[in-house]
Amino acid sequence: MFAILGLRALFFLIAAAIQRLRYLNIGLGLVLGFIGVKMLVPFVYAFLEARGLHPPHPPGFHVNPDTGHLHLPVRISLIVIVGVLALTALLSVLSTRGAEAEPDAAAAPEVAPPAEATPPAEPAPPAQEPAEPETPGGPA
Image 1 (cartoon, rainbow, N blue to C red):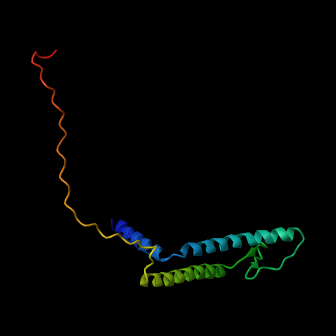
Image 2 (tube, rainbow, N blue to C red):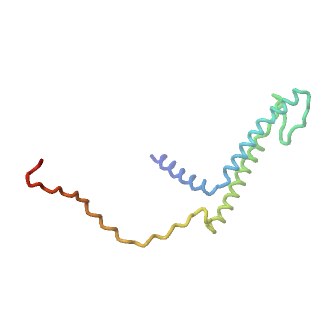
Image 3 (cartoon, helix red, strand yellow):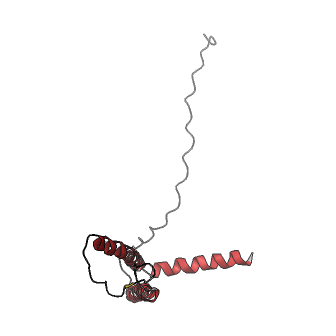
């Protein structure tokens, strides 16, 4: 039960943090792009070598002696990922700090002042159907 309460509190903490990290989606896009390029470089390098071209090793990559494949060390990958995420978080916090001091008119629309209070109108009486005049000789 306490674990559920902890998860609930963590959810609200993350929801509040996401509102302040406005550039997080850009940072995550850059991280995913970096990972995609990191995965494609060895294949492009192997493709070029198979065609008889011998391109230079990209900076930071080294050849694994056991497999002969290009490899980017984990340390460099972690530095790039943590650096991009830290930079986007820092930029987000700095940009939202200025926005809190001066609220944006588009972000918080003004609420119209309440109209003067008037007493509610009394309901109209129910409509009555006109009565049919009685004939002296009774119903026909």
